[in-house]
Length: 238
Image (cartoon, rainbow, N blue to C red):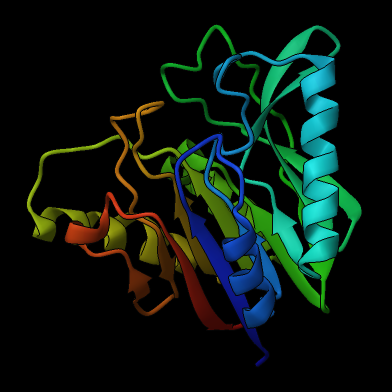
C-alpha cells in the first residue's frame, strides 16, 4: 500500500485561488489537487459556453498551477469546444504537463441539448499510481465503476455539481454509502468526490465532498459545512 495526500478544493465555481490558499496547498505538498465540476468557467460565459481564447487562458492557468504547486491537478471541469461541439471536460496536469483529459459521459438534465457526451473512459498515471476521473452523474451508472476497475484505476476523482436537497442527514449518509462506498467496491478503488460551494453565481449548490473506500466513508463534509468554502486534505492508502 502507498499513502498519498489529496487536496479537495471545495470553493465557489469560477473563482481564483488566492495567494494565501496557494501557500497553504504548497505547504501541505499534496500529490493530487482536485477541483469541483465547472470550477474552471468564465462566469460571464456561463457553464455551457466557451471561446477559444478563454480555453487557452484556462489551460495556461492549470499548467502554471500544477507546476507552481508541484502537484497533479485534476482540473474540475470546464466547457471544452472541439469541432463545433461542446463537452464537459476534466483536464489533468502533472507539474506543468498535460497528461490528458476525460469527457463526461452521463449528462445532467440541464446539460442535455447543450453538452455532447464523451464516449471513452480513461486512466492516467502519476507517482506510480493509476487513477481515473468520473464526472458527477457518471456515478449513477455501474458501468462507470466497472470500466475503471477494468482499466486498473486505484484512485478515482469525481468533480461534482451537487444540487441542494432538503433531507435529513441520515438520508445523505445513506446515499453516500449506496453510491460511493458501493462504487468503490465495484471499482476496487478509492473515490474522491469534490463539490463546489454555493455563491451568488450558483446559489443552489450544496458542497458534499467526500472520500470513500470499499469499507466506509473515510471523510465527508458534515451537513453544517455544506455552505463552507474549505481546502480538505486527506491521506489515502492505495
